[in-house]
Image 1 (cartoon, rainbow, N blue to C red):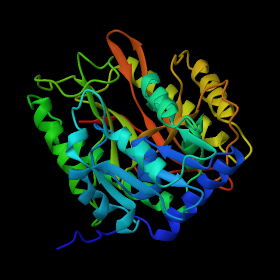
Image 2 (cartoon, rainbow, N blue to C red):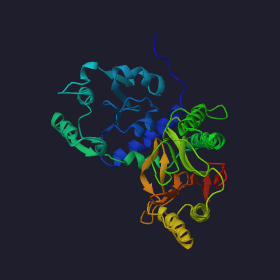
Image 3 (cartoon, rainbow, N blue to C red):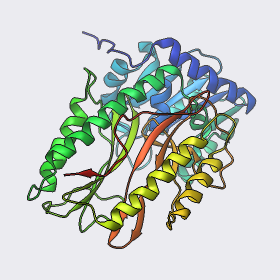
Image 4 (cartoon, rainbow, N blue to C red):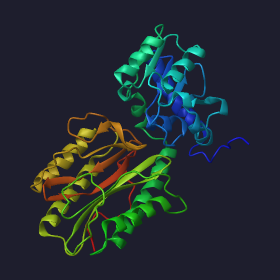
Length: 389
């Protein structure tokens, strides 16, 4: 029996639209063949989400062919056949002999494919920021007739503006995020182990809501007293206590797309300091969102947030957000004052107002939003409040 095609996250026409946009950028860059190695970009152009990027793999886009070709480890080829939209002939599994060989690896199979299919004429582009200098040199040495160009981050800039189908998927992910936060409010209690609460939150992120399960897990940062000043740690072996503050960051996932969310919890009455910081951060958040509109810049959002926060006697050292989509952070636009990226409809951002103020105190709140024709649409339906338990 052959591996059947699984349910596709998006119709074939959606993938072909994305590939056409990449090909247009290839033509502008005078590139005839493109070797995609970023897992997020591979997901974007093919639908593949299996966890095989620990070994060489590549999606090859050629101006000569309508569909791309995916080369991966032979044992992972069935997953690619199942998940991707492409014809079976477009999935190639390279042999196991290329695994753990000190002299060659799966990228030699990629180079052989380019040579065997006469794709080495003109310019071949690589996402060089994801590759070692030694590997880039191998492409140059083994394909001396081709010009090797750099295509780093060009696909993410195409990804920055989402289709309506992508936006719908991110709304589904946001509903899962909301469910995870509400489950946290139910299970965070004095003397409950952080690990047990995390298990319930994670189970909710997997089960999903509205008949839509979570299709993957990303970050679950649970930073509870005395670790509420930390930004990126997970649950500990400790228990919650009366008076504990818990800063929670998580993201529901649908087909690789993430809608991130942050909220702060307090077991018992929040401290006066926490309340003051919360009020300032929410005011800044609302000022930032009111600035969002096509034609404004990422910097305008950051200026509005920072100016409002300063009125409350606070400052935030880190950026206040970033582009978000597949696999959480997109390496493109940032919500910081010096970023002049112009907002366009269906760009999506995580307005991330984590503020780690002192070694013993931090606070978090956030919204994932999209740029609309007239403003901002936030994906979460949760109130912007400290969740008091």
